[in-house]
Image 1: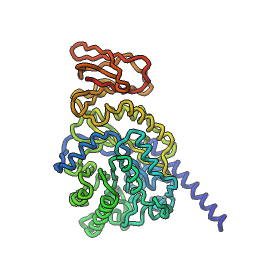
Image 2: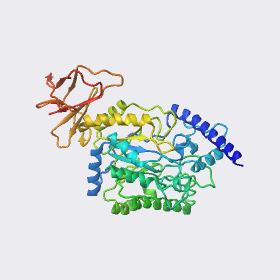
Image 3: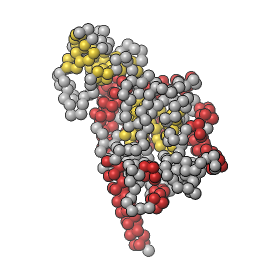
Image 4: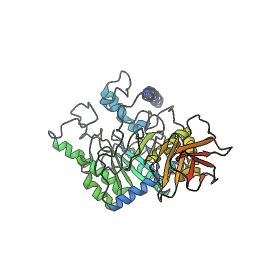
Length: 466
């Protein structure tokens, strides 16, 4: 019997690996079919609660954060929950020849395989702190409904699988605590849609798209149970997991209004004063900042916003992922900051609970750059002239200093001099990493040309203009 069980186990792992390779290969070459629209200032409502306004201002000082997707999809290394949604088969294919219902059963069954024995949240926090990140957002539940916290509302969670006897089984609690010890702002990602909840996707009907698969007006009792279920889970997270700074609500095809978000926030902010609400893509008083996805707005925005972009092609871990370079991260951070936003970088841990070496390497390089040039990023605000060529500009909050960040193109070489229009020096231009005063000239009334010192490291860099 033991030999038979071992053969079955090996066979299951072989099938799982085959599924992972098939799906990840397709996903990495596909264009994602559902990406939230780019943001604009229309429809934004400034908060009126002073505590929320204060926290929003402090959050805008942080500039750089991490968004961690981790769940069932991490076991085979596929594109988050999306493969179980019929609407998205054109850009995420499932296992060839497997019926949809069988695929969903296979996917739900991954709960018996997620066993992150190498999970070390303190090490996670060390890695992200070394990267210069100042805030974090962790996926407590994605659209598939699998909970990475010990909820009382369902057994479909990390705390009821093979990890159930581990003292760290309440994953979200330990992640939040570890980052809180490093003085990060703590963000809780939560999907309003829940495809595993029978009162969202009723088993009595097909699931043609990502939305509720029945008409709520015909089944008001089901809808009420879904709303009550969602409210209780949000109450758990905002009551039992320490101070939360950000409630990051995903799944914009369900609005906060539908789940009674106003009343949820009233109670949640009694326990978490000033907590920011990010009801993504639902413009109004509960979208305290906007979240353009996988891109950067074309121009500067004078409202609070955050670009959420992946380090690889996907939010969660996938095998053999093509990671973007540390220079890309740095240059993107400079552009986003100059346009008035924050940058949250999407990174997924493996099913074992670790980050790949290539991820850690890139994050370390970004962190080293921020140690040299971070004053041009953190606690800055946009200036009138925010861009010229490869140069992005930011300003100190007291408006006494302007910073020029030269975004060196990939595989580019440093020029002998850097020039731009506007943002004229009054007294000096200095290299921010060393404080060295640099020679500059002004021509045509507003053209500045700064001579760079010899021997500079070939990297993006920042100048202090006074």
